[in-house]
Image (tube, rainbow, N blue to C red; front, side, top):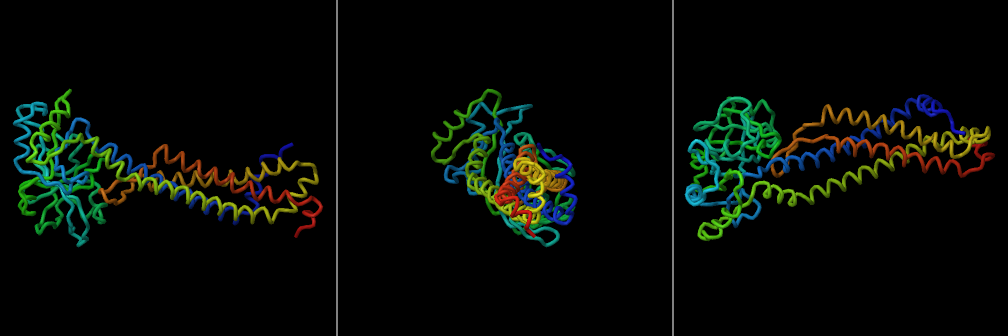
Length: 384
């Protein structure tokens, strides 16, 4: 015969202070799990949606996977368009975007200085970067920039400091913010975009970092790769944009593995914390447990009742942490080496967070309950 369901619920209410402390401790542990899993999911999502399968990147073969270190000749875009027929053309406009991309120290209007990612582009950039949407303001003209909606997080400043009309200082020049753009969560959102010619003048460079090409439907990467191999004097390589961000996924794999290891460590710490608190809770109820055995309840029924209490507390803590994570943490911007991205509290994060919470409830309650049943009923009834 099992103990009534209400018995375990009443036991939780009978010790409100201990119940509240246990609930807060479990909720804190589960919240840490939500933060770490949200970090992993946000990083993976940002890299996964950044690439366009129809876009081919042409950059220096010596830069490996770091386009910031790439340097190619300024005549490369014209050579590519003159030699290749697979580039998308519409209304006589070739969809090719020459770009100068580098990390540089950026100082904001409120005197905050941080390492920012600046991309010099031309008017053809939106034709190739099809996920870019101008949310507010205008496309930058001479001496102006437009900023991604996560650029403030990347620089460690406030959104007000990156508002339209404010100024930024980098590469020895003052730039006025003319617009705000979004990219659907892609890595571009942490960047600052400006006019290519102005950026080349400010950096005293006439070269480019890369050329982004939007390929026509059915076009193959092979023709672009063949051009790069034939023109050995240019030292170019061609890579589909999705493949480039896939290599970044592999580059950041150790970070993701370390983050999952942190999830395991946090969960283990939570289990030991739960064990400690449950041992304290059961130790004060030895006579109660012995009395239940004396009146006819089996040890299995009492064990299930104690596990029920732990699971109820863990479930409440999981719901509380999940609510806070979805309302306050979801979408929070995080700075990273590649730029910035948002915490992603999606269905996977909720499943893992709540699963860890319920696991804490079960594993934290079973060992203390088993230990309490080792003593005989006669000895337990005399316990103080």
